[in-house]
Length: 468
Image (cartoon, rainbow, N blue to C red):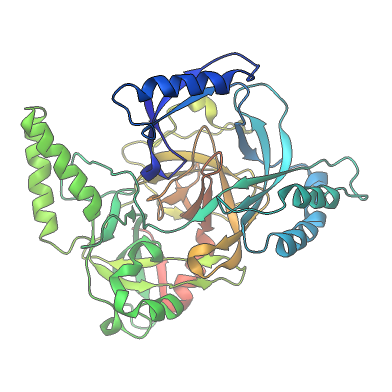
């Protein structure tokens, strides 16, 4: 017996009697499940409180994504068919599509061959003539110019989520100092449960007078509620470009108030059980002091909801803080066998004195990257060779083309990870996680390249950006 729920919708959780079977014939499963539910209804369970599920995980749909093949012939074929696919979706699924990706797909629980695939994500719960849409797409991907390139089509439920809003799982910290770190949760003081991630520390040097601003970088959407009274104006124009006196007042806290509450509850429970007494007392003392402070500081600059000249969403904010600190790279993957094979072999073993000191080169398909975030902590993935077309439900249904990171061995990110700095194997900063897809078979990351971020920040603030 366990609780189950639709992915990322835990509010609808129900008790479930889950029966695993290797039976390949489901003919009698419904009758068996109905009898078991009737039996459960005679116990302490109400009829609608519990469900019964019988499943054979080897036969369930469980395809997962890998980066699309880098075969030049296939990529040329995709460039040819993309406009056709876009036209079909724009005319036949205009109100329900959320993103279009090109991945390699493979079943999770068997050794079937992987297929290069165009995936059309649609809003969960939506309805349309999907069989007809799929057939139109199948006709569109047949290329006379590239007869050896093969693509399949999938239509899946999925959303692109950039918001720090909602109800992410609470993160509990065992705090032992007053020093924050890369990847810890942050949020606007007094706003719960909204939580994002502290990306890292930067230094802004004014090009005119040399004034230095120490700052922390995170996405605009993580701190957007700090200026709720002027939200519409901030969304369209950004924050801080008319002078500091026009910046909204409000502290950005670490950890976020939501995670602070969770940590306090956990520490108090430990004290009641007489477990980890000294550590819990120390964490409670630190949190008590932090809650009386201005946290990291206040927002000095923010992009609002704008675009780059490459039609990428610009979503960044700089929190002015009194002091800066060096940025630590994410930890190495626990399972080193999952690091992609490269020549020369990739090595990633950050030591105690290794820091993120440089901005890295532009990301390209096949690059291996890592991040440390609030919710999923240390994860790694590979840059997909084909950018993803995204419809931003949270930004007025605007569209953009975004860098797509496919997670390796699991999700690359989840709600609350927005703001995570993305680094390469040389500990160079190459991007920031701004969104992820949800409700599909894996949460892949939408990352804004650091080059695009720097260009926008420096142009709009009149400052040069460097790392401490």
